[in-house]
Image (cartoon, rainbow, N blue to C red; front, side):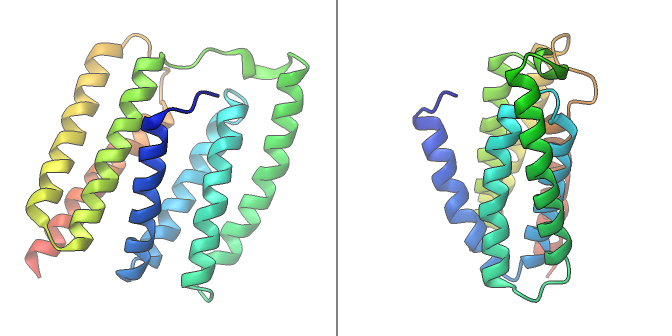
Length: 188
């Protein structure tokens, strides 16, 4: 796995955004995000087990944050149970990949597309931070940038994106959810 400065910056941005979300009373949003991320990991488990392992580790950190900030959250036991089940499934998928079995050999989207989606995620994280930080104008700008980047990625890589590509669907849904949250915030 390749780790560059972009990855470090994205992790730093996520590390600052997630506590902001929880501090702003967003335990419900954090729980929903974890649930969606676990579903995405489950979906691509057989296709990209190494990425699933990495992503599951991130979800462990988010679960720990949710448990720390909202220990009585009603979704927490179910999320922890699902996380544990996915850990076992990831271990099986990794073992199958090591043996050269399973669908782990199926190619994923091109590296440029993956990098573009990472940039979209970073823009969306910035939008969340600005929204919770009280700057809706800047949040709107980041949301618009993320939507433009999604459209550009779809246009450029349309023939190479696997059908029903979960990370792309999640990015689109998150952009729509951020727009809705921003509209709610501006109405208040």
